[in-house]
Length: 149
Picture (tube, helix red, strand yellow):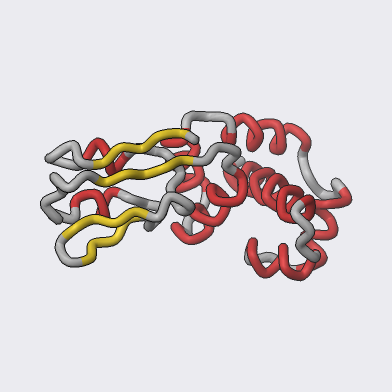
């Protein structure tokens, strides 16, 4: 079943990329599949509509649950990050207060690799943030705030 759900998530990602003007080859490269698979996805061939419905439901979960589900479904963290980045519908803004002590717990907690330490201070890339708030939960000084925009 997880492979069928993975295909459903890749289908949803392929449709979003196609809608944004990407070519079949570019979509194939982004999702790590061959071009003919993308053609099948976009033509609705070889896919279980139930798997697409389940995948759509997963994308509608809370950001944390969506991220955690994709991490379980895809063995590769990079693939999970790509699917979350492509399929998420919401945008988030991350702010880090001056009270940050540069401990790095947030960096370790961030599966999306949206936070980096520079000069012993955390810096966040809001574009990469999926809104899961795992970093916020780990911050011992409550210096991280994530807001949906």
